[in-house]
Image (cartoon, rainbow over all chains, first blue to last red; front, side, top):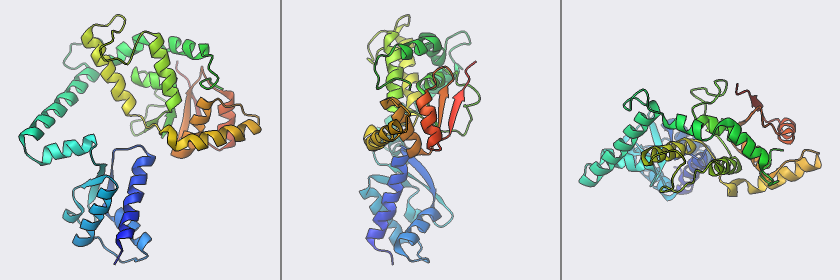
Amino acid sequence: MPSYDNLIQVARSVKRDLDHDSKAFRSYERMELTSRLRTVSGEPTTRIKLSLGADLERALSDQGLRCYPRLTETTTGDRIRIFRAGSTVGDLLDAVLVPSPDHDRRLAEALKKFKGTWEWDRGSHTGASETTAAELFAKLLPRGEQLEYVRSLDDPDLATT
Amino acid sequence: MILLDDHLVRDLVAGELPSEVEEPEEEFATTNLWLVRLAGALTRQGISSSLSGSIKGLGEADAMRFRQHLTERVELLTVLPMRDIVWSIAELQQRHREAGHLLSTAMAEVLAAAHALGATIAVAEDDVGPGLQAAAAADDISFRIVARG
């Protein structure tokens, strides 16, 4: 039976994955976590069943991580998504999964933001003649202006060398 | 993963990224100091980070969506925190200086980030650093010079 230290090692390896790629979340095959646990525990037949799944969730939580669906509700062959507690994806999941007036408001705010982004990026609802945010950016910072700025830098730390 | 220079980040935000770099499944990264240069160029154009600040020629609504667009695009990029790579930057700068490749701190950060992320470095053809290109070749880091038409 793997020890809690083994579970902490697996949780830390997941956190390292997220830190390395500067990600707020990432999906894993459940089997990937089982393989890592087998490696660190030296027990090649270990399986993450109910009790071990709950302990691994606790180890993840100690690293500031949560997962959905829960390990205790999934089985071999399933995928789970691990995310940083307090991140936007965590807030969104809570807003969807836990019905409450506060979460209704959060969900509505998120949808509004998403819809706004969609409209601005594609100009779908703003009329064909309206300038998109990307076009505004291109107009405000033409390539030549940026190049000239970089060439004018007299800071040796920022220079292109 | 492709590490974009400040010119290509500008192109990404402007929706003008050359097609040879813009692949649907590709993940992009950049560096702290390339972002500093981009912010410097924007500041010179009269664009501040202040939410209430005006932007030359833009009304309030356009200024707000301009800032939101810029923020969202930049948030999509992977940027390694400086504290994670400072030793690597210093060591690479020293090692390559001794080998005759002059690297500014900005270029040493690029090399350190490429090492840490296993990324390809992509730079705009009109601002290629000879020291960075030589150092990347010496360290077996993939280096692409991107034509922008």
